[in-house]
Image 1 (tube, rainbow, N blue to C red):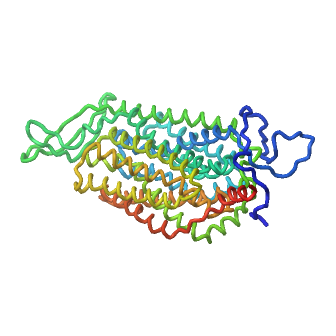
Image 2 (cartoon, rainbow, N blue to C red):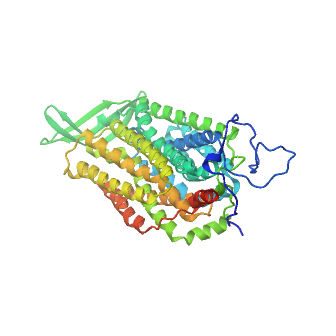
Image 3 (cartoon, rainbow, N blue to C red):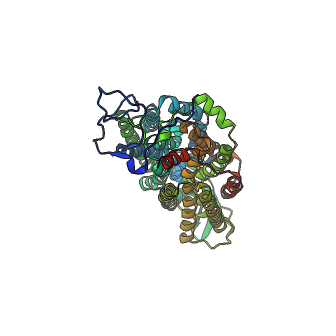
Length: 524
């Protein structure tokens, strides 16, 4: 019967063999599990397992870099939103739409890509993903020749990149199960998911470093001859290819009309945006080529008993997952919190702009927060491997930290209960990212453990579908007229609070881990 576990002996940790051969030696292109040291003339003795390969770190690194690039491309517009609105004439809703293409494309494609990973394997899935990122970044570069079509071209590019999201987000659990022993699985999942998230961190700093916002100096309140001028309308005109902003308004307590013309750096900012587009295209092209050259489905010999065990077929796995109540608790907790906070952090500049925090400063806040959170998540994943479980308790503790740090952030910026300071801004956001990113690999591992022997690609695909669903709902709120920005923080806080009762209801059980560790103990 499909999915039933075969009673095979598994090597203990001390018996696991680590390959020291060169990267490409003895790679079995068909992915058949057999010993690579066996004489070709000798008959196979049946499925073998318990061998790990050093090349697994290269595979994980290449995938993580691809996932990071996909996230960086997805999040490129939030950190440079001031410049993008200035150059292309966009509004907050346009920036939200560009960011929203991630979840919009993800939701209908999650199931097809889960099928692709489960049936066709990692190699085909990763190559398709790399091509979509390559194509998406490439079409955005056409804007340099057709600036009038910028809105359409940028949206098409973001949509193609968003289509790469299902594999970029859900494959880490599949990769760790296929290539890593059980005592390294949570660590590998953490690296694959968090390094992907760090692509967003890179966009916070790379974008503002390349694209310097100058447009902010031409809007808002100005002081002219001792009078405060209120600018109600801004138009743009071009004289001999030099672009000017013409700002129209009235002077307070005076009846005259004030007109001010500021020469701008519109062309410079446009060119800087295109340099950023070219750089991301070059990186995605290199990764596409690397994935074609070498990215196998799985190692010649599986690292664990469960890696060698046949999973349920796709249709049966989906049906069982839909009936798994424990999994749906993880689905709701992970999707609500991580989906909302992921998009909340992605448009941090929009959130902080009303507080007169510059695009560059917001970029540094997002960068340091994501780096700190990502490093903490990898450490948390490693500790979870050593503990061999207890993921639920860790998620609950991190959820409480997330609630407290979000309250701190909101009370400081929007209610003024806590005095504002740069140190407080950085500290509160860093804690938010530590708690939020630290939960991600644990949610993946809990979902896979709760649904075993359903294939990891199906489980992680559905989990990340929930992430994008809640992210989409969050970003759609920007289309409500005059909604402002304070709602963003209260919505995020509500999802963090919801995690606590959902996790308290969750019954902790480690099906896959018990097979890999329990049978090894029985053998001894």
